[in-house]
Length: 78
Image (cartoon, rainbow, N blue to C red; front, side, top):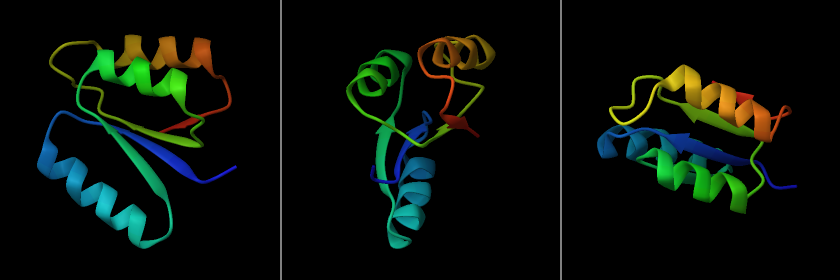
């Protein structure tokens, strides 16, 4: 399995910086800016790590955390 990381953050500047740094170290990254995109990508790909903004404007971060855990109990969420 590839070291694939999902970044969930509304701010494009922040996701660009995080993604660039991770990709420099050989990781593959996908970026989501909202919850609809999050669940679409999450179901489509296998991720080893998720960087989750708990203060998204369109959803409660703790609720998202719980829903993701229901779908995949092995993913690391940071």
